[in-house]
Image (cartoon, rainbow, N blue to C red; front, side):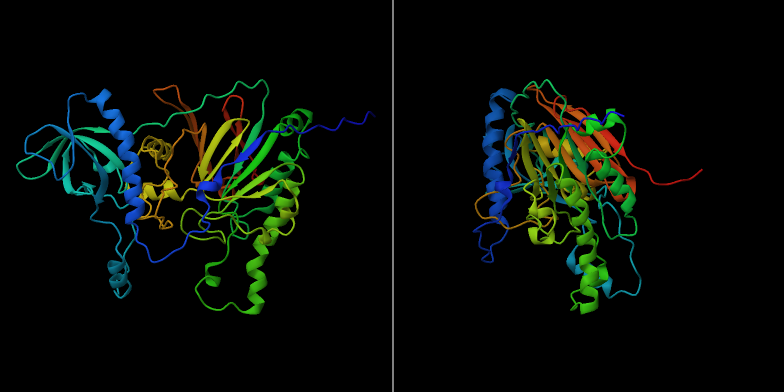
Length: 435
């Protein structure tokens, strides 16, 4: 019987672009968040001012303080969304002391919500052709309209920055794939070790027929997008952990390390932290410490990355998060699906507009790392309820593959992207034996 020829795995040139999310040499000296809003407004105002002459010629740009009643003009500022149902720490405290438990809504929208535009000179309430349901606090826009006798600004039109410029995709002649998986939740009740092992065996080429193994040999990278381990909340209540429980906390991390070691022995892996992982809570989350992965970190194919994570593979630009930015938009605004929220963040040129208002982030003083300067070719978000994807096309021929990656522990689904065509497919692993 002839011995099958070993398959050679394809390679792709990889550049990590996470430097902008690294918190190095930053000193927290009690600074407030006004700096990050000021930096965001200053950067976005330059972009929006450049768009006005072509979109709205002859209409003057002014400030909130410079408004004149009934006079057509454009003002640029940061939106603040006044929300009746938005949680408040004082309310939370009073509810805790209340005997009647209150149900928490999944979304804090209310028909009475309204928008206020703010710049350095002042603030004005917006009315007219701007839908509060679509926007969140922290977005910078230009609005065209006029001040009313009531002192509000009646909006006729909203100008957003739009998709940023994009570098052209180089024409590749062979298929290469990146596999995305998120929400492994090793250590949780929903985690199925056999399901994850099937995924590992498939991408390392130990499963399937010759054709499937041939496709597996074209996988050039695996990205693990957050929430890889589940540590029981009872260990995280601020109490000292008993010595007998310390090993139980480490068990999910050890199990994840053993499984990742199998993958990194065959191909490169990027692992990002998520909101349930042992990392800092606020964005940008710093890479998980390599000492957590005593096995996998001995391989040079193992990369512990930040969240958000930005990288380039064979000139294809990727940017993505473990899901906190989109989940937060879902709480404070409305859209037909999660992909629409993703599209908005690109049009607003900001990955996490609700940070620092309702999403924790580091109080930067001289930059806002979540601004999107160049358009990615692939934009992914982890830990979503279901798999969704769409190819977004911009007015300047930008093409972005948007991907919602489902939680693997619940769905058994990983996502595969072809670098040549940006086409997307799923890898599904079911271990149920129902008749």
